[in-house]
Amino acid sequence: MKPKPRTIRCAIYTRKSSEDGLEQEFNSLDAQAEACAAYVASQKHEGWKLLPARYDDGGLSGGTLERPALQRLLGHIEAGRVDMIVVYKIDRLTRSLTDFAKLVERLEAADCSFVSVTQAFNTSSSMGRLTLNVLLSFAQFEREVTAERIRDKIAASKKKGFWMGGNLPLGYDRHPDPEKRSLAINPVEAEVVKTLFRLYDELGSLGAVTREAERLGIGSKRRTNLSGRASGGGRLSNGQVHHLLRNPVYTGQIRHKDKLWPGLHDPILEQELWDRVQAGLDAASRRPRGRTIPSGASPAAALVGKLRDETGDRLTPTHTVKRGRRHRYYVSNRLISGGTDPSGWRLPAASFERAVAGSLAEHLTALVKSHRLLETPDAAAALSLEARVDTLTDNLRRTPATAAPLIAEVRVTRTSLHVTCDEDALTDGLGLATGALSSGAVAFASPLTLRRRGVETRIVSGTLAPASDPVLLRNLAAAHSWTRDLHAGTPISGITRKSGHSESFIRTRAQLAFLSPSLQAAILSGTLPPDVTLKRILAKPIPLDWAEQEHLYGPPAT
Image: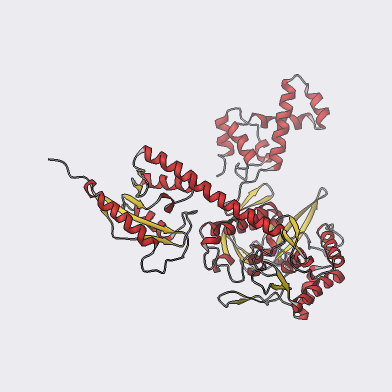
């Protein structure tokens, strides 16, 4: 008697990128589900059984795995409730080779396969997996080409002077003719813009301009989105004033990344006033820190006025000078005004600013990948938005100070950063319409870890890349150079003359060249435990046994 085939529990997954037609009684998701159900019925002799649950993702892109129905399905698979995923086409499941690799790994771990009813293969065979990889390569290629076309179209349109949408700058409205992709001057707001530029021309200080603008009752641009939600009109921050004073749109130009093109709109400012203000801003950014600024302050502190600790105390920028080098810090105000306090903060400014900018970049990247950046996700504009987010986050990681105008407040605790963004500035920076950002985009928390490396506090937030210890790196490179000279026959007296160091200095540090390969790799990559400093390594003779070295100095940090 022929054995009865084992039961294969089948789940149907459907997806549609846009929301068009989903309101219909019988839509694309229903059509996919019907075709999949018929295929499962045709395999009844193989023991296939259709599960009653539906897994439908409508209006969501296949460029990410962060889809509600898909995540629910994966949870059921890992719980052992599903043996086979049935899809209409493979790109309904994913369009990304990277995501596909992750998906296959999870499915194989749960002993689950999937099949496409319109493509004659399934992943239960090696040939099916090979065919799937080929198809996914083309699907990803198509997605990347589409993204490139959108970026090229935006660049070409801006080169012709077109306004490509986003938050309207103060002083301009959309052109009354919807066929013209340009801006029209708002006479009342244009006078406000001129006033702000004249104030900076006279006062030469962003803070003074901001205070005077508040006294005059000047606020940010009032905006109303398509749903009727109003925003803006609040007091201007230093970051908003700086962004406005640097915006070339007021001279009749359109900016695309680092290039400027003549725009189709009329300028608001005279070129002479614009040039004077830009020269003043450039001079302020290069202003030497020292006698020209109040004691305890630092104009290089990008996050000044925006930091508070867990007690609500403001963190004040300060600095010290050691061996001619300026070291910046953010210090709890109570340490400056009230003496010692063990709960007070003293954070190295540069690394803290990198941590904040990196956390913001990670936050925006995660949101756009999972389609949670906008209040109402727009599948048609998803690739364009992702390209704009990539540009912004690259800039944040490259130049951390550019995060300052986007941030309203950062609250620091011992384990986390709590960041509140300036909604108007972030919306404008991403070229979005007013009110387009989701509530989860404006405020977020990021893990924070403080580690000691000698006298330095190392700040690790989110998943920032590890940073190498420059002192260890410099001495390791010198050690290899000295040992090469010794092997070549150069006497140590010749090395001391050439390097300017004493013989004992060279003998102790040359030992670094004999560290194990894994320890040297950890020094180069910055993954050595933070407490392993040059001082600690040289405190005792370095053992020759590599295993003993790694036991003594600890495994590389992860």
